[in-house]
Image (cartoon, rainbow over all chains, first blue to last red; front, side):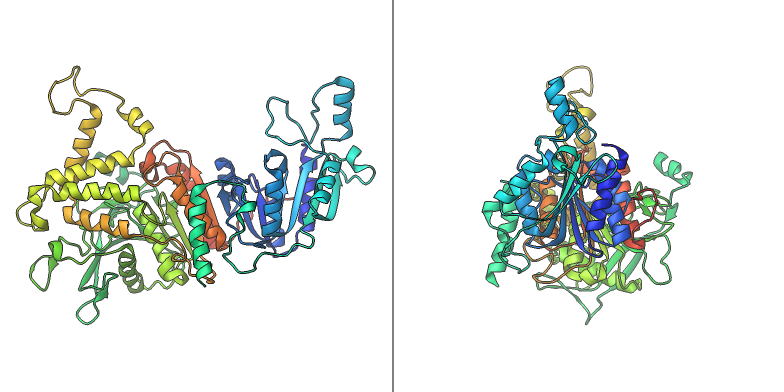
Length: 237
Length: 390
């Protein structure tokens, strides 16, 4: 991805986030997005990141980050813990996308998702005319050396949201340097969606209540032990 | 000694430090212990580094591990030894003494100047030995709170420690959260696991099986050196990782062939013997019994760290090490899960060291990066570097 493009999606996300809100960034990297949000919007920020070197860079910027996996690191949060949960350029690296998005919608009032569009015109050309896996500004990896495990288009994502009854509050489409307004599934390199769980009734607003096991992305037994204790205390009350 | 000379010429060393003593809990003001017993009087040995600022906002309490003491940094005036966390505490180091006022104190139950089983019981004029009351990590922290009051500090910038020191840091949050702005917990746990309790029980049994232990009443006739030495050898096995042992010793022999006897043949055996023998010169066997029991009792799981419905403003930095199997990462992650659930502002990082549990004493570079900036954020708020403009 070009630096202009990075700036563009970060700019769009920064314009979406309300000042002083509570923000969780999943796969926050070195805090390139969280840092300006904290500095300019004074958000209460928390990151989750798997790379320990990146965590050190976050801490240098004064950010709070958990060394954890996106797929297993959300379960402990009570419902509606954050105003925004951000999944920018990390969803395509997640295996259990459905589960992570549902969890993000549970713990965040709104979910901001940014991802590269696999149906971008240059990708289509590469496949159709060259017969090769596409390499674009937003999908810059060779097939054998990519962190991405999910390849989706803007249309795929819209169909997914409709099927899951997830409401799309905002949609932003990004080209190399500017926004794309015409045929985004063909001309956009990246998309940023703001989602909410339309008609979703929180299970409980009581702090400390643990979500049902059906939403569990993980089978970590230690987590279960710790949480069952919390659950026990909550039930006692 | 060589280390001390090198330390004296080092520009970012604290230099020579003198241990100080604070005695409190005199008759009528006894320290109430968790067991229901009382302790009086109580002396705490402590050292301080750096200068307390005018609004007392730069004080950090550093908490030591099982066999540690108040001498965390600099060169001791008494024996010229270098402090146990000297690489982390000093000018421009992780705990920067140019900016912060750092306090370290020996725990009660210890044997390095604070009241413990080897102290003289004023009621009898004899060493406490097993008359010393059982203490817990909470009791250690309550005693420390008296010292912090005495030093005129209302709110600590940070409580920080590794292993048992991390347990004390957590206990500070549990007992006095409104007096702690941040907590750094390294290679530690919310509660001792059965495996950790089991190791401690073997350690205690090895001391108590030594005939020289005399039911704890050995003062004046020499301590149970064999038992204590074996106890420490067990400890050192648990402090290292399989990899760090391989790197350090492999199967190297002391001489060029097997002795076909039961004297140590291998370097690793010699190392353990050396560590064991050194330890009996500096540590009291009964203190080892009492302190291991205190950490076995430690349990802040469930709602004990942060009470139900109580919000917490203390910031946390949790660090674990990949190769640490004595206090494995999943125990630090259990702390993290609890903090997530309670919306605490926290950072957790698992560092990829091969040194096992010892890593918290030797992995300086990465710990320094994390701790230095975490403290800076706690002390000053966000840094504006201007490099990350959008």
